[in-house]
Every structure is written in C-alpha cells, then in structure tokens.
Amino acid sequence: MGLLRHGEQILSALHHERDVRALEQDKDFQVSKDAANDIEGWLADVEGALLYSLAKKCNANGVIVEIGSWKGKSTVFLAKGSKAGQRARVYAIDPHEGDAQVLVDIPTFDEFKKNIANAQVADIVVPIVKTSGEAANDFLEPCSLIFVDGCHEPDSVRQDFALWYPKLIDGGVIAFHDTLGWVGPRMLVKDLLYKSRNFKNVRFARSITFGEKVVQHTMADRMKNRYFLLFNDIVALYFSCYVKIGRFGDRFGDRL
Image (cartoon, rainbow, N blue to C red; front, side):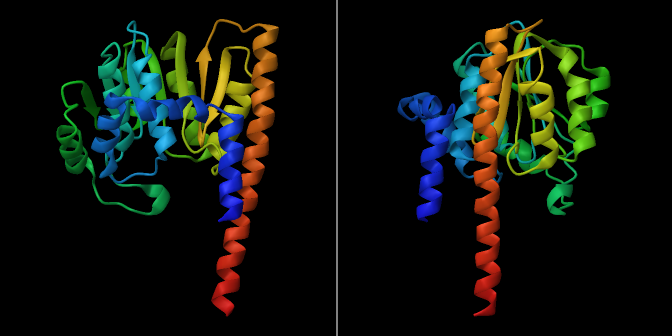
C-alpha cells in the first residue's frame, strides 16, 4: 500500500489530476458522479472528472463523439459535463455486442439505455449501435471532442484515429483511454499526439491522454508536449513496475 500511495503522489504532482480534483467542490459534478457510480465500467474518478471537464468546456461549434460506450459510465460524465456547458450533443458509438477484450459477449444496449435514462441524459445522448468504422462512414457533423475507448489493439486504435481525426475541428480535443496499460493506445498517443505538429497542450490524467488539435503548433508547444511525454514515460514505467510487483506477489502468495 505504501508503494501505491507514493504512486498516487507522483501522479498528482505530475499531471492534470490536480486541476481536475478541484471539481470535487462542484455540486453539478457531484450529481454527475453519483449518477455514474452504480454503472459498471473501468473509469477512475479522476478520469470521469476529466471527461466532465472537457465536455463542459467543449466548443459549441461541434458535437461530442464517444468511441466505445459499453454500459454508459463514461457517457454519463460526458453528457453531464456537456449539459453544464454548451449542451453539445453526445454521440455514443458502440456495437453493444459485449467486450472482446475481457471475453464477454453479452449484448449491452438495453443496460446502456437504462443507465442513460436513469442519469437523466437521454435527451442529449444519441446512441449509434455500430462499430467505429461503420459509424464514421456516415458521420458528417464536425466534432469538438472525441473520446476513444474502443478496441485497444494497435491496428484498431490507429484506424479509429485515422477515421475520426479529420472530423475534429481546429481547437477540438481528442482523448484516448488506457494509455498506460495497453500498448495500442500508448504507442498511438506517443507517436500521433505528443510528437505531432498538429496537437498542443497534450496532457494526461491517470490513463487518459488528450490533446488539442491545431493547424501547426509552435516550438514552445512542441517543448511542452515533449516535457509531458517525459513525465508520462516515468509514470508508465512506474505503473509497469507496480503491476509486475503485484503479479509477483500473487504468484508468491500462491506458493505459501
């Protein structure tokens, strides 16, 4: 536990989490958090707070798109944040055939709809029951915020980027989940966000990495992105060591 607490201090000191934690005093955010608490999903509190914050600040010239909704936990944070801001519509894209990454093939659309209704955001959420590729073919609206949490295989993550990045307006934000523990999302944000000339203010909150699209960033923007990439690499290394130590402990415990 000491190692974990130390890691939390590192995370808090190095990235956007400090700013996001200020939302703990926001009554509207607390309502959103309560609405999402009982929904299954892999989303840390600080990540939910980040999504709420990004959606609240979302440019009214575009919509919000979520790639991978599952049962709607992250969708609720996005929709509640949007309602507290410019009320940009949230398009929640998911085939709802289960979760191949954890070998679960139970359809989730009915539960998703129930959770969205219970959270009182059905008026702003538009479910699209398709894969990311199928949805992208017919999607014409400009996007102010894109949150990618679909299949984490390297080819799939890169395909999501290639399909949806052109739909993101200048000044819009794209965010990727699970950029610490999964190779696909991690390598994509390293190559196409932190090192790209078309993104500035690339930051991370726990395992979500996000950046703002620009026509071309400045040298100062590039230096800031590389600075945060360095810290992201440190946290990723720490995370990897923590996971390995945990697995070693589990195996050692099994032998006792």
